[in-house]
Image (cartoon, rainbow, N blue to C red; front, side, top):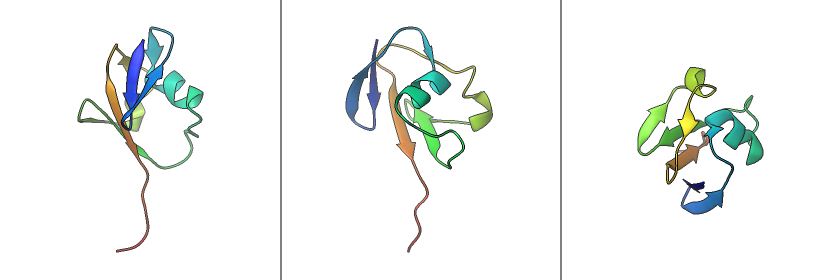
Length: 67
């Protein structure tokens, strides 16, 4: 299965949950970051039950300090 993560193509087994994908990509679920799939924000409380599908586009952003 092909998933686009922050503009880069990644291959993964299918089906895969968002949590599994994030862990496999090295994300620490205890850290603060936001996820959007195909332009739609995904609440952290739904990561476990959110299933990724072929060609989903994920954007992951972390908070930054500054102004």
